Image 1 (cartoon, helix red, strand yellow):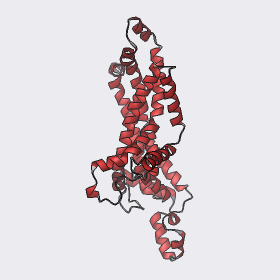
Image 2 (cartoon, rainbow, N blue to C red):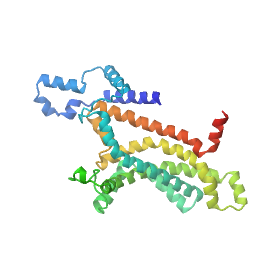
Image 3 (tube, rainbow, N blue to C red):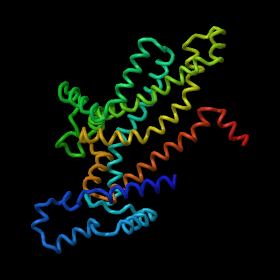
Image 4 (cartoon, rainbow, N blue to C red):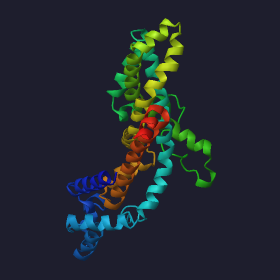
Length: 316
């Protein structure tokens, strides 16, 4: 995890350094730059790190990161850790709900499709999953925004709180109402992968010899699916679900842009377009650490889900 996190930081820094964006023009504008003196421009270039060797900039950032100092955001004029903490609060609503809903619905749909292989419900579930997996998440978000927010008016058109309302008067219901539609869209985009994989595992289980023996003993299909199928498909489902944390992060960036939701993904886009290197590096490394932590949690949960893994580790 340490080596991977270091690699992510190097890759993110290299991509930002190779970006053709001029931070002064992106954040100040060409017209404002034309009215400034050479001394003012030089001070701004020093503030944004223009002309500083990339290796020196990376080593300065890395030394601060190892000390627990993520730097100061050039756009927000605040500590990066504080900006990330504020944005993360909003994103947790989306990613937490989407992660749980996509896992539960994906496993349930996959088990139904696998248990009823070849039926109409199997074809509908497979077709829906293939359609959603081949559709960009931002397009699904746009369609949901048009239908449910503009035409039907069931949800707000964006933001995380009502427009013009003071923070002291914003209730939990208001926050949930604004986060509901983005969270639903984000959860829909995470269902196909786990549903299709669970279906294949369920078909494999139902074709096994021990399931044939269970049918010979008179067990019903529902009993076989819950007793034998669920236990065998749950282990790979856990692996996929925790591995999908990275996809949830990536999808949240596009969804937050469509719904103007002030979360971590929107902050990453603003940092990239504004050449805010400290903020972008902080978001990249922390999000990578969360993804790697999800993969580690999947490995540790193997022993909980499958006792055979726990017994094998004890013997070793």
